[in-house]
Image 1: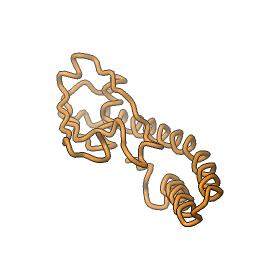
Image 2: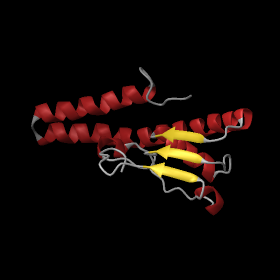
Image 3: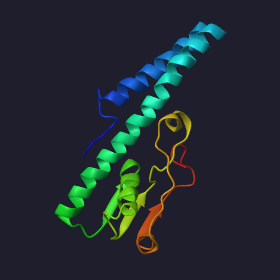
Image 4: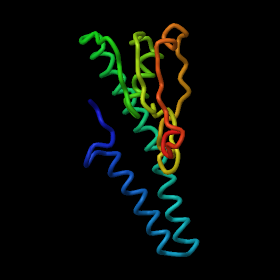
Length: 142
């Protein structure tokens, strides 16, 4: 499956770039360092958001093909996979039962800058066949 955060992938490089500017600002200790880091990071945020949306579309496309080919009895997704499964249900590629473990439809912390948050709109018939398991102490995916 497609992974936008694969080792040495474009997202990993961009996140390292953002974090390095944050560290530079912290060590610079002045407003000039913070403003340079802010400008550099702010320019990357739209790129990161776009990249994550592209990654989501690619994952949904891969999942659509796999669902048609494999015809599974149930779909189980965790985190990013849960969000992909929700998108597939939204778009009508899957209406069967699904178990979603902390589906990543939003994020907190630094991930909130780039994460493609969304509010799923599922058909009632499909929603009745979805079980979502979410911990109440999850600090990343609320």
